[in-house]
Length: 121
Image (tube, rainbow, N blue to C red; front, top):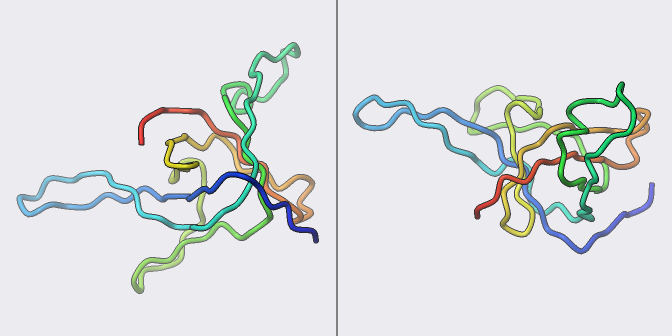
């Protein structure tokens, strides 16, 4: 397996619901996978085929990086699998919603992460 490298630094963050001092539940994000190097490219999103996957069609960018297991464990809690539903990604400080994690053909060679730009830092 080769090293993809890249010119962008990324972090995968997982969503956590925490309770504050007065009992209100708030959503925050914790860094789950750090030091990810990869390539970020703009995605067209203008599919010409009607059967095109909607999650991919909604994507604004694609991030390519070396394969890694997407799991997270926090302070003695059970390990969780990182999914698009429980995570987001920051690339060079910019925030992206994760639409899809793709391990093409299950070969564990690289990951293609389909993203939707949400803005902000």
